[in-house]
Structures are given as structure tokens and as C-alpha cells.
Image 1 (cartoon, rainbow, N blue to C red):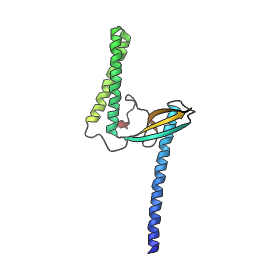
Image 2: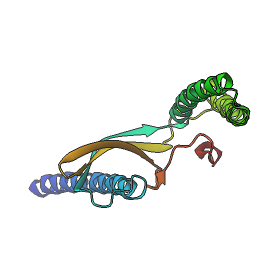
Image 3: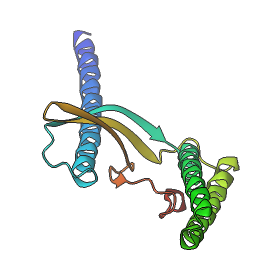
Image 4: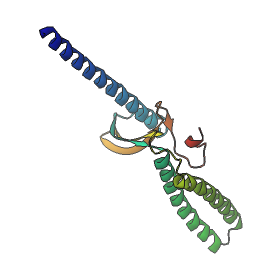
Length: 166
């Protein structure tokens, strides 16, 4: 009977150690993504340290909502530029901004259809949303980046190849 209790305790301890090891590996991979982002996208090669402060997840639905928010902000900015160009009678700029606004409209319709769709997956992990800070010369700089479930960096771009088409 004593041996059975010892074996059960040993199994519980080993399972707990394995779970902790899996969490440690996950945190290391997320941290590596954040460090890579600082070096490659922010072009900071000499940061003193990088600290991950929060990890969230995005599903298809939350990704579509985030893309819509980005597009709405972009549309607002482009409309302001369009109005300024119209007042200044800058025809080339007006044409360019008009094309951009049409592209924004197409992408907005695409993501709105996903948001309205009942088939959009709101459970499966699409991206990790990493909030972090890097420190350089005693100064803290906050940033956020995104990683796929296989820990590759993903740059949010509502006009690029879409994760939901994969």
C-alpha cells in the first residue's frame, strides 16, 4: 500500500514537471518571436533586454475585427488627405487617394463579410498577440507583434495575403 501511494505521488510530480516544461518552452518561443521582431522590424540590434508583458490570442473572428478597425482608421486618414487634396486641387493626389480608398472599401467588405458570417471560426487559434517592451540605455519602449501558432512572426497588413485564406 505504501508503494502505491509513492507511485501515485511520483506520477503527479512527473505530470506537473512536464506541464511546467511545456509552459517554459512556449514562453521561450514567444520571447524569441518578440526578440526577433525588435531586431528585424524595429531595427534595434542592441537592446539591453526584451520583456513580454502579455500574450493574447486571435481567432478568425477577432482577426477580422482587428483588420476592420485598422481599415476604418486608414479610411479616416485617407479621407482627410483626400479632402485636403481636393481643396488644393491636386488632381494626381486625388486620383491616387481615390484608388486607395476603393481598395480599403474592398478589404472592408471582405472582413465585414467574415465578421457577419456564421461560419467564421471563433475558437481555433489564428495568431498570438504579443505585448512587450524592450529596454535600451535605461529607456523602455513598448511594442506589440503577432506570431502564428508555429511561432513565425506575422505582420498585420489588411492588403497582403490573408491568414484566413490559408
